[in-house]
Length: 249
Length: 384
Ligand SMILES: Cc1cc2nc3c(=O)[nH]c(=O)nc-3n(C[C@H](O)[C@H](O)[C@H](O)COP(=O)(O)OP(=O)(O)OC[C@H]3O[C@@H](n4cnc5c(N)ncnc54)[C@H](O)[C@@H]3O)c2cc1C
Image 1 (cartoon, each protein chain N blue to C red):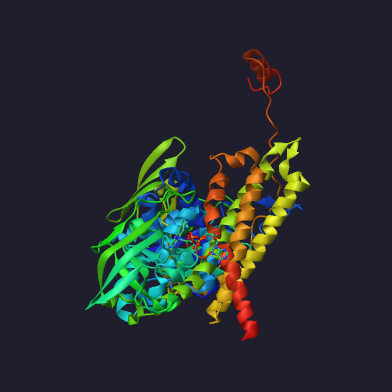
Image 2 (image 1 turned 90 degrees about the vertical axis):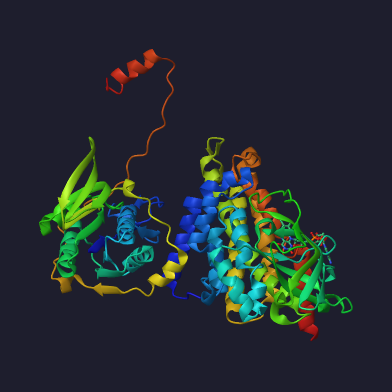
């Protein structure tokens, strides 16, 4: 079985992102970019499935600017077999990405699509769901455990109320949560080997997908700075302030 | 050699992430227990850190000098003890084999050094021969198909755990100084080879040194590096040329970490109702550190590029080692000052780094020896 893993290039999780002063976006000029941490978990899972003999080929796909090739190379170094970049210099929103992924699924015919449950830049948490809808496939989102059986995938989902176990009919779309696994450190020699793995670059047009944005982001602002707390002398004052100043009790 | 910037960029990113997520969190334990935990050692082996500079045909990554120093800039932002563990396999422990070893010797040892299965040490210094290394007394006497070694080596990095030693010993007692010296590979466990107790050091806990003692230690004649007597000292000096550039890069990495820690502290610590980073006297400490650090980094990168182009960088390597190690010492001192009392307390990494980096001005040629070497090169060039 073939697995398609979607990987997104995002601002590294260690970077403290600031809004541009004119409010037109986040200031990401010259900041460090990395693979979305949730997507790393997805790649790791695919590699483990391959190591367990349950998967024969892993295709890592990304959408966006040319530099997304770095992200795909990282996936290849982790153990993916080949990569596809759908290259676009214009902004790609979730629906456009889901449509591009659908076109790649039609082309590649994988038995399983693995994605991170969300990307740490826009935190939209919708690409996997949109893709499943476009494909008409079963979906398992926010999973922390995955077992592949005969034509079925059993997943444990991390839902608000606790853990939910579902059985999905394959082929299926799965979005992963951080507790599914701990991604490996890439071995340095594998980074060099990844250079020799195939990486195909195509344009959205070639897939017949209209990627024009549907949403307009009108303003970016940083959350207000937290004010320093105060010390109260006793419980009575605390209760009084909670009741009359904060008005929460 | 990787060359391709995309691939090398990924490699450097991966190392810096390993430093941040796996090495720095273990620093304190390593310092307290004087031991790098086996789990971390295994991860370092799996990552490929022991074979950075060993040629690809022997299982290493075959990094160029420029690539090596750039990896060190990242790696050395964690405690120097981690670098020390992988330092000898990538440098002084393996280089004599790489530079002068026979094909058979390389095949026999380099793949196991690259994987980290085997640790290599470099044994030059003796109780009576430090800066004046050419005065070494350890002897190697030919007896048929063997050499018999006698003598003591001092302060040998990684010796307690080493699987092989590159040993410099005198094969010709008549020949003057350097001319009588040869280099050998001695395997750990050879009868007649014993180790002293681990030295108790000022810093770099977790990295170990000890005496290595040869008492009628018989080794096969085939272990003479390069198969020719009398060339050992020359090989050792070539090993140290590269080693000095390596240490200079280590100093840049460590200084970067100390400056970063100092800057973070200066922004957080408030006195007189403002962050101490607002005080111009503190700013001067930060600015001087950054400036010197940048200069050292440029020097190291330049010398590394020249070496990759095949130039003789003996003089430049000494300049880099001298400037970068002294710079590192000054940055350490300023960083402690910025931390105030906290800088003297073990809970802050800077207290440890201050002691750790003191070594860089001493080994692989003291600052004074580098000064002598630089001046000697200049004079020789002028009068040649
Ligand atoms: C932790 C540690 C690890 C080490 N690892 C290794 C290793 O792996 N392998 C190895 O072979 N060695 C190793 N060494 C040894 C190290 O290289 C020597 O300590 C160093 O070269 C200095 O030699 P020395 O200690 O004998 O000092 P000395 O040579 O006795 O020097 C004492 C002082 O005199 C100065 N001095 C000496 N000669 C002159 C001169 N001509 N002009 C002006 N000043 C001079 C020196 O600069 C120094 O300040 C290690 C040392 C330490 C502390």
